[in-house]
Length: 231
Image 1: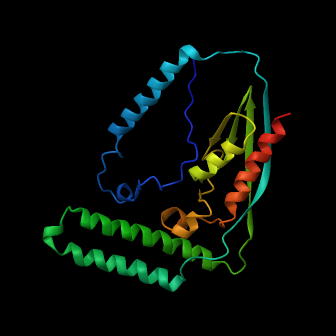
Image 2: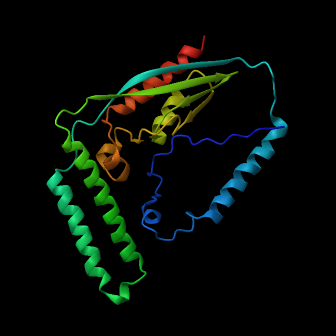
Image 3: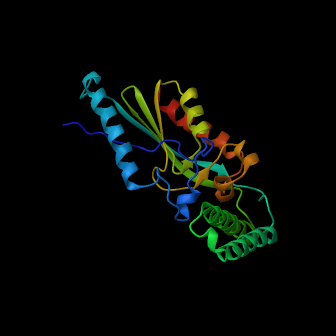
């Protein structure tokens, strides 16, 4: 018997030019449906089947685990005030109400895009309320991470949606060629954008509770765990 496991890696990045906001507001997207999921599933299964003849198996692999808690810095500021966030959210709602009265715009992408605007401004408002509601904001949050060594391969587990550049930095800094980063593991700690992405803003940054400095902590803690396993 052969067991094939599929994991999400560092998956939080939308800089590839794709965003899921349209599907989040119910708009049809050809690559956000169950039919396309089947297409991608068959692609992955086919890749595994093609690789099987080349895989060398062993029942004597050494397995080691390293786990620890690390303090991740939380954001010290928010890009807009609570009043600004409320005004933007109200304006988006008013914009949609006005456009919906125009019959020629029914079922158009114009309305979908305004619904996305409502989705984004609503998310920013919710995060702003959480940020400004705490009189004494914590500076850090303790997050548990693991690294698992199986033979000559290591898996690093991160409980959140980490941006791809962070995952690549971990792989590049690892002493092991077979280094795999697994996101949304052992819980969910939200989006963890790169430092640079905080300049760009948008969906993941608006919803993130982390400081721009968290990228450095994530890379360093991941490599720390890996090095504990490599003698």
